[in-house]
Image (cartoon, rainbow, N blue to C red):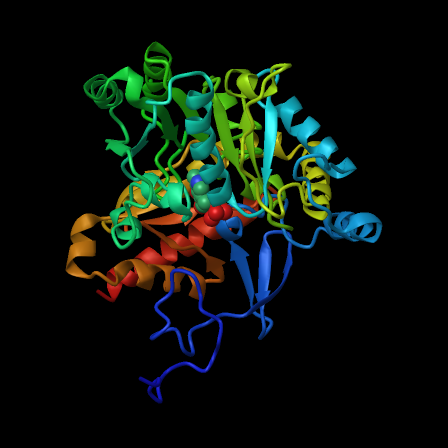
Amino acid sequence: MAYDEATPTTAFWNPFANMATLAGEAITIVRGEGSTVYDANGRAYLDALASLWYCNVGYGRAELAEAAAAQMRDLACFQTFEYYTNPPVEALCERIAEIAPMPGAKVFLTPGGGSDAVDTAGKLARAYWRAVGEPTRQIMISRTHAYHGMNAYGTSLGGIPLLTEAFAPLVGQIEQVPWDDPWALEKTIELLGDSRVAAFFCEPVIGAGGVYPPPDGYLSAVREICRRHDVLFVADEVITGYGRVGQWFASGRFDLDPDMITTAKGLSSGYLPIGAVIIGQKVAEPFWRSGSTEVFRHGYTYSGHPAAAAVALANLNLIEREQLVQRVAALEPVLATALAPLNGSDLVSAVRSGTGLLAAVEIDEHARAADPAIGQRLVRAVRDRGVITRLLRGVALQISPPFVITESEIGRIADAFAGAFDEVRRTR
Ligand SMILES: Cc1ncc(COP(=O)(O)O)c(C=O)c1O
């Protein structure tokens, strides 16, 4: 059947969009500077999202463009399968291992975003247990509200039903536990039997599921449970890695000593796509031990892409030089204080903040039930006030600005939210 006359003429199919209704609604972003992006009409928007939680150093950083250009002039690309390596890749992995919160870390680079990193970690978890003679350890456990990306492992591990029910199970042997209950994890492992469980996947701060900081004591309890049952602990730090919670990694902040960390986004601040799985000694050992014949038969055409690695390295250098991780720690209470008054709105059921530059404002469930479109109305009302936010899991508005955001810009975000909630309350 052909498209009808009302079908949009664009060929670009937006992720997560209803293409039937997008016509005339698309916003064309053409330029960015600091924490602000501009559309094709010259309208400025303060980006309260750092794009999708990643543009941590802000827009318009010429030195990252120059790092890409310089590397592309020398060696734009060359594969890293088997024998080959290149200087930016070596330097980047060295640097990541230095800042990683576990000693002796090894780094497996992925070419895209966090989804590649999660699939890599899922496959490596199973390959590890096979390599050490426990091939029955195949089950992976994840949490409700979890988001681990959209590749096969990530989709299957996901805890947001709307994002998984049309596709999963893609990967078998996955179990889910409530996001906030350590004893449910222990009970599940005991029921399944230690000898069948490979890994527990855990975002230290749940992100796309609605920004849930860990309940007090939760992370240390689940870490301990994994140790007791010899289950690998995989910290998914695709959002929290590289400074967003006021330390290089949330695993450092919460003292997790994970077996693997999945990362992407902030590694390059999104200037070029690249991700990394940081692998602790325990998991690396059977593959790296001298004389081992174990090979991790996995990798992507663009794993170890030199231009992306050069940009990521320049990005980490920039974060360090400008002390942006410390800046996030200093801004954590500023953001929390600025957003706190939103608790006074009868449309708000919770303001979650207090872990770095990560926050969410949850919309009251009765208001959502009365008006299912209220979330998108709020997103639009915030945008009408010159600020970009978005709806998480249909329930909460996201705030995760670039690390370079200023205190007065944080104030502008809070004002835009307050104005939007007020407007939507009045026009219900
Ligand atoms: C915790 C987490 N893991 C994995 C991913 C997937 O990353 P990407 O969309 O870059 O593939 C995301 C994306 O938001 C994420 O938040």
